[in-house]
Image (cartoon, rainbow, N blue to C red):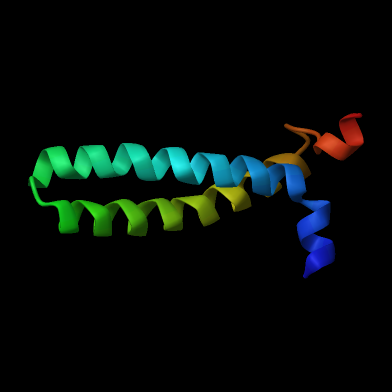
Length: 75
C-alpha cells in the first residue's frame, strides 16, 4: 500500500488539496441553502469525500489515456 501511495504522491497531494477546497465551498453553499450548521457540515463532508475518490480515479484514467503525464515521468 505504501508503494502505491509513493507512486501516486503527486496525484494524492492534488486530490487532498482539491478535497479541502471542496469541503470549504460545499459547507458555505450548504449553509447558505439550509441555514443549519450541522446539516451543512454533514453535507460538506459527505459529498466532497465521494468526489475525492472520483477525482483520484479520474486522474488515473486520464493518465492512462495519455492526457496527463505523471509528475515523476515528466521530470
